[in-house]
Image 1 (cartoon, helix red, strand yellow):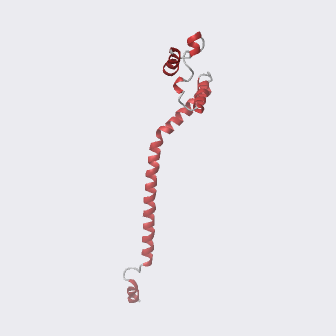
Image 2 (cartoon, helix red, strand yellow):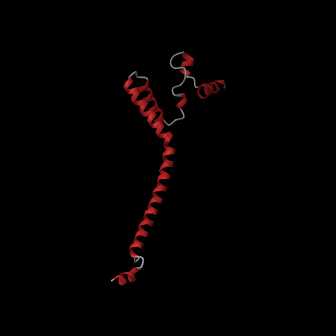
Image 3 (cartoon, one colour):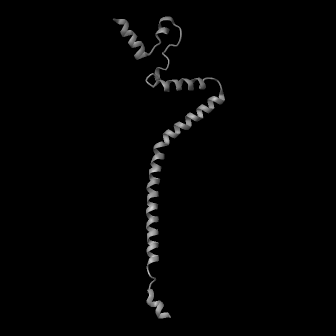
Length: 125
């Protein structure tokens, strides 16, 4: 009765590696204890990133670090970019309406006779 409870406490609460606990060999904690709730694909990507970061290859480290920082910043600023896009669309609509109104006004001006109209032209001649 105690064994299942102990197993549950070790794996779920403390996340100790049972093999380490019994033999003293291997890692103290189960692998990826902080990431175990993540989808398998994400866990695999994190493992690959971890390999790159601890590989000792400075060029690979710097490249991955730059990419991670770039994408993190892109995610952080996404709400602001979306707000700016929305505001730009509103402004574009306003400009379009103003231009349409201006074009309609010019068309009406062309169709109107000049002030004084035909009577002034006849009187001059």
